[in-house]
Image 1 (cartoon, rainbow, N blue to C red):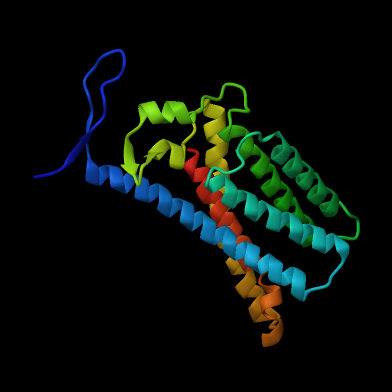
Image 2 (image 1 turned 120 degrees about the horizontal axis):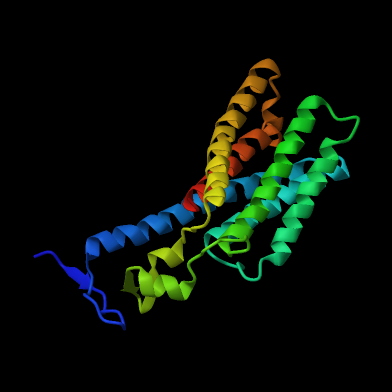
Length: 240
């Protein structure tokens, strides 16, 4: 016989909901799997940038760039696990300033056109971080989010090792005006396209300018950016 789990009826009366336990398990496992995918993607980028910082001793501006990418990757992992999400004014200001930094680097007269475009993309990526912090916490006008209390009362809950876990709490979706959803769609598709572009750029450069085997790991930044873009696209996809 199929086992089911029944929610308690709401305080104002009404029929109790009967939800298959198997379906509930899939919801929770899906959220956990998504969190771990995001963690792996940004974990790879953190490891790569740590190696680049240790192996390469370039200009101080390059070091700052790498540190900002490393910080962004760590922040994405924390965001995926809902750690440090309140208050968010500090992270929003930090990533907006990081975007200004990359705009400044892109605007240098000595930069090549390709470098300007790359740093311009980095600026957009940092602005996207600030946007996510704002949207996920209701920092934009007209936004309607799901607080943990609302999620606990309005979504299926199951008991696991004495802890109540909610599908909405584990990886909450956000709702809001149409323009916010439109921006999130554009960001999702845009970062998905960029995630494909970076590996193509990497292998094209490998064919035209092969590097010694010993120095290959130090030239993996395009692949690292592919992981970052893919993880960012996933995070924006969750917000749709």
